[in-house]
Image (cartoon, rainbow, N blue to C red; front, top):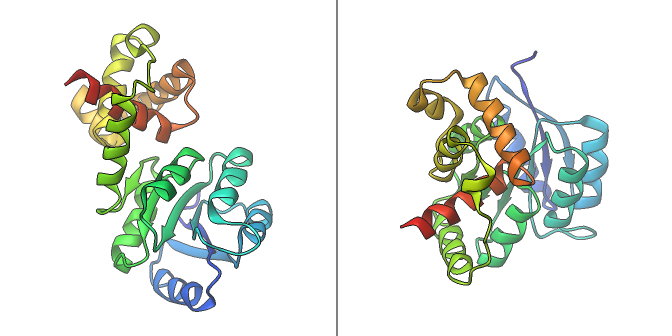
Length: 219
């Protein structure tokens, strides 16, 4: 399997796309395979190019980034979508994560950090920018206080699956979970798949959100 990560850039501003292309092309393991100016073009190119990762703007004409993320994630769940935007308000963050985004970052992120974020997301991790994370935590606390999440995870998951579930909630990577539980990384991936299946979660992102709610209630 190739080590090159294939990228699709989605932004209605050509200058932004050109800037991202110039910066990311300097990375030997990253390759931009397409550019889109709106969500409709993004969906079409996702189908044509099958990129590994999509950098998705939110505010675009014709079809916005949240709608495009939802469509692409529903059809191609293995494609990782990183929201890259200037907006970090609660509504946009929540909507993007709920429809399948794997990361939510702001456009002022340094280029090296963006390249690292792409690699991290490709490994199956959830990533939030420094100003975004507090908003997610606050939103989760509000949901928890309102009693919106009432799933009894202890009854759905085995003891080992619960270990995995808790560690996902504190942002551990697959390798960190493997090291902490003395398991192979492949075994950890299998357990994560079982957790997703047994809880009925949409994907790893939703498992992490539920785990954070669970951990907050347990305090």
